Amino acid sequence: MAKVLCVLYDDPVDGYPKTYARDDLPKIDHYPGGQTLPTPKAIDFTPGQLLGSVSGELGLRKYLESNGHTLVVTSDKDGPDSVFERELVDADVVISQPFWPAYLTPERIAKAKNLKLALTAGIGSDHVDLQSAIDRNVTVAEVTYCNSISVAEHVVMMILSLVRNYLPSHEWARKGGWNIADCVSHAYDLEAMHVGTVAAGRIGLAVLRRLAPFDVHLHYTDRHRLPESVEKELNLTWHATREDMYPVCDVVTLNCPLHPETEHMINDETLKLFKRGAYIVNTARGKLCDRDAVARALESGRLAGYAGDVWFPQPAPKDHPWRTMPYNGMTPHISGTTLTAQARYAAGTREILECFFEGRRIRDEYLIVQGGALAGTGAHSYSKGNATGGSEEAAKFKKAV
Image 1 (spheres, rainbow, N blue to C red):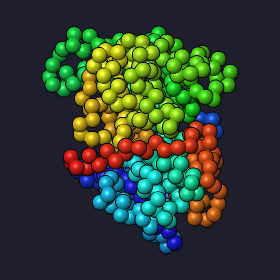
Image 2 (cartoon, one colour):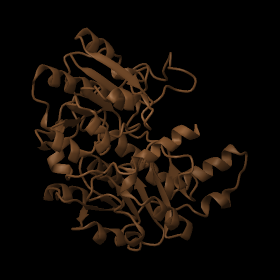
Image 3 (tube, helix red, strand yellow):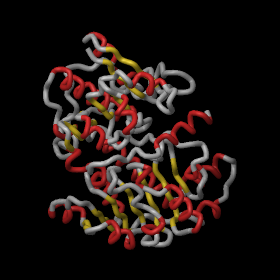
Image 4 (tube, rainbow, N blue to C red):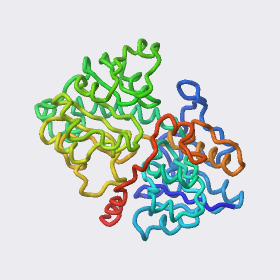
């Protein structure tokens, strides 16, 4: 029997919801390209419920306890005195979400002598030290594609919000003003702009498809070039390197995984390549960017705006400069944890657990590390190494609350 340690974000401040805005969710049975949705043997939740917070428990308690396993759920994840740190010592499985990540650093993995599976309820496993997982033969898995479209929609919303100066304009209305000149002095049309994505995987390609009707010029860079048919369909311009693409774009959206090769790829030097007045939207990972370089670029006017929902570490300290820098459209990490997405990644988490406990093969598209090596999606998208350095700073948020 296994001990499953699950780290989830806190419930709403006014309590776990008793009712919801909608009665049900639209139904789909596959993602673009044909990959099927998660296929667990059963689920113990109603799609549309809040599953990603501590009371939601990803709908796992009945399943796990009925099979003799122990489930520990907490939101207290940072610092040496946290519940996560105490419970990790004898945990067999760790589950967390990218939105409230349980950072599995080299030190923590070394302490977790029983750890066999690190499972991301969502997409992105950079909060796990992949090198230590490889060295320790820990399987790392995530629910690929479960919230890719959720994130792609958020990217389009953020691009429009920045370019049209939506958030400051909304604030004028909230304050009772009618300050049209203040609103429009930083507002432009997206039409005819050049928009580029760093990575054109599931999320990046979905962003490109959703932007095509806006009559923009579309660009992308990726180490895996798209089929010629897709390039022609969307009239895409491919760039061999990120540095080749930056100078031609008015808007750059980051949609690549975080690993040692992409860490801090947006920095003081690379920002010099951008057009003056360019916009960056980042819903991938905060550590793709040098925190202070982005803030300086906004203050100097090198960038006209920066938006997204990813920070490093998460939760971000209260004094994080992205909270207050000019022309930012930052939110907490929410793009991939809509109620719609939660139903899919909760089901995918259960599917992975069923496979793990029953000795069945986990889908290749869900695998990041297995058998002491990058595997499945991990071999396609990640590189070896550790990107968790500095994650201890997340404890600052806990102390400030």
